[in-house]
Image (cartoon, rainbow, N blue to C red; front, side, top):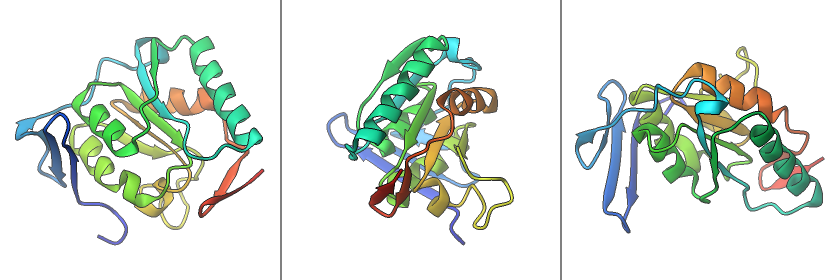
Length: 179
């Protein structure tokens, strides 16, 4: 509604997991309530999942590997890369992982359903580089879906993940990048 997702559904056919959420109605996996990991409030507590994305320019790959190194050197407990933004957000919503970060999601279709799942499960979804007074607002799926985003169980963890990652220098314009 006005760019803010209000319903989210993600299905994993291999595991027969149907995640669904509705604004104000909670988050569920196969009709059982789910909740984010509220115990991870810092990198040392965090199992982080991250997608490198489809871009393979030298600048993007270098920046991505530097970001991973910064998290690991910052004390990150564990790191995974799975390649599916929607499922990563479902895993944050269910508490399977503590946080998800990606720079350069394919678009709002990658994150809109997950935004509802995470928020209704008690977590936060933040755009990493957009000011709070931006237009559209930073919780708008068109903003979240095209820059750098972080989903986590707690605001403290999301902020530490973003701060440690640093501000990306590689910018996305649709499916093109600029450095």
